Length: 114
Image 1 (cartoon, helix red, strand yellow):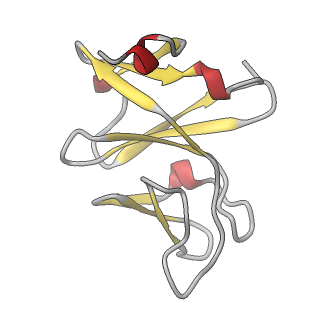
Image 2: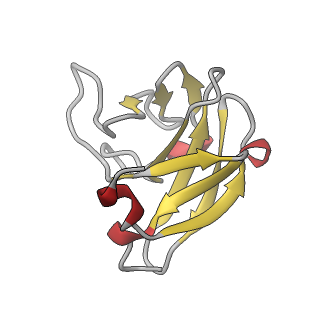
């Protein structure tokens, strides 16, 4: 583990089994809902739970690969970067996660709202 990684503050948010494959679960911070997604490769991603288009709940969207499709207007959002795929534009905040021993940890350094 690098010195930079060891200095980060992590909080346990879920077990990987708590997140359905091709689905999401939401955690509530003080002012933000964070959607944690899991794809078929057991990769997990954390995004602000709102589409950059009209604020739709991304956690209710369809996950495919490293993309989620917003349930309101079918915008496709990249789970790695939080940005809409072309031709659409806009981004949402992403949050750093790690998985250790089947537990999902969220980097709390970027969360002033917890």
